[in-house]
Image (cartoon, rainbow, N blue to C red; front, side, top):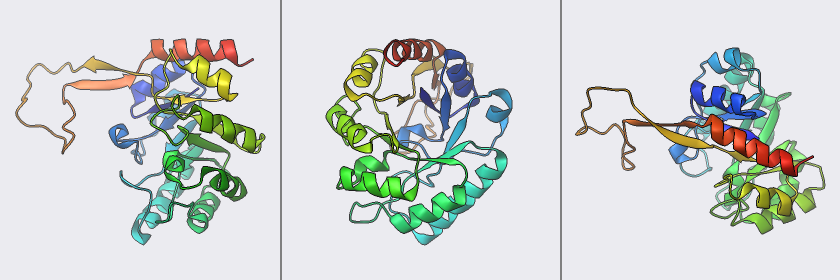
Length: 244
């Protein structure tokens, strides 16, 4: 189980619940962006930390300046002790940007690399699968190009069949205790990805509710979402009952 986290507490809860890896991000409401460098998670938890390399929300078509930022971020996190990186770069036509992905993969080496859910925005997932394998990624994170891994289960299953152990296909997107068993059994996946979050109230006593810190989305200021130890534990229990 890989848990996507955006805080130290979420990472610690994920480890306590039995997760085997965390994907460290910022800005999960936009699907995750590059996080801050803080080394505390690596100091406090022994499980591998894969870092999201995504300079902004939105699409996965990047300018030259944004690509330079991505390369620098990979170098910084690599030097800081990250165990892997997570990224994906597309062309305007909806194909894998092979040259840039190869360059970033080389910068990250020998760290493991996951091609993230930019995969779900590709025009042809099966041709792209072969390209991503050739570049040298170890994993693809995908919802099967649908709104959730359950909705995209048929595509995920076909991808796993076509991958033939050359790369790990990791279902992610809307996975819960209620649908995980079906997703794992029908797809044959041996890894999965989710946030397993719940909401906890702020301990702030004084609250100015007239001044939101967010933009268009206006997320609540006085509620924090963190990975739930209980949810992670339950998901790991389900997975272990399926995957021997």
